[in-house]
Amino acid sequence: MAKDKRPKSKPATLPLAATTPPSWPVFKPALPVVDLELETLVSEKVVVLRSFFPQKLCRDYVAFLRTLPLLTTPGKPKRGDAVRVNDRFQIQDHRFADRLWSETGLKDALLQYPDATELWGGEIIGLNPNIRVYRYSPGQFFDAHYDDANSVTVTTSSGEQIPAKTTWTLLLYLTSAAEGCMGGETIFYPHDRQSPKEAIPVSLETGMLLLHKHGDDCMLHEGSEVTAGEKWVLRTDLCVRK
Ligand SMILES: O=C(O)CCC(=O)C(=O)O
Ligand SMILES: [Fe+2]
Image 1 (tube, rainbow, N blue to C red):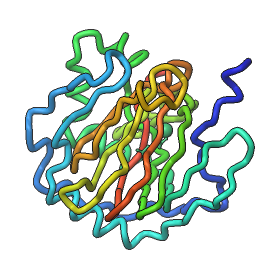
Image 2 (cartoon, protein in one colour):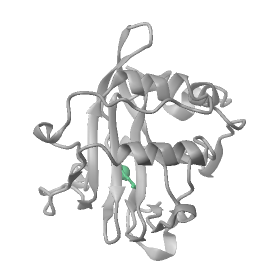
Image 3 (cartoon, rainbow, N blue to C red):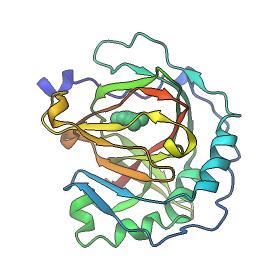
Image 4 (cartoon, rainbow, N blue to C red):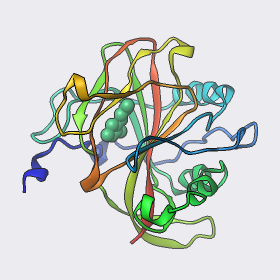
């Protein structure tokens, strides 16, 4: 199958992953700070929630994330993997995934969507416990690739473990031009080729959460090169019951 040869965003290999969840800062002020409204950028493929995190909370998060042991991605990827040059931290943390899901207004905002089950690819139950933090400094980028759907277990706040699969990628931008970060747009290519004419760039916006459909319906996309400042992103995925 041709699709299997597509460059993928690969999970970091396990020996590089941290094992003790960090003490993520509390969500202060209490979230959400605005009425969360889904804005569609590409029909059925890319949506955003602006001001998901207020600017102050983003600042607190970046200050905290700086203290984590981020690892620079080795330059040369394995065949079939996308070139990703950034610093990252990865942790399995179902408690933080659940906080992001149920203590921020995210769950309610996504469930409110009129055709929620159809749009999200099933019954949404939470976020992927595989939490990733990216820092891109000037010259760093994430080359064009597709994100895979994965099988995961979602642990709810009551401790229930639910077999799930990921359907959409979640990116939370913690910096933007407002903090001096230039470049770093997430760029989507609807026709499987990196054509500048067809590019749909999404500019960084501090506190904006972006969701894009992944798996078989994933659009080719890249994190373009950062040219000044730092781009900080939290990454997880939306999960549906399997
Ligand atoms: O950093 C970005 O803008 C894109 C990140 C991405 O594509 C990924 O995490 O798979
Ligand atoms: Fe991606």
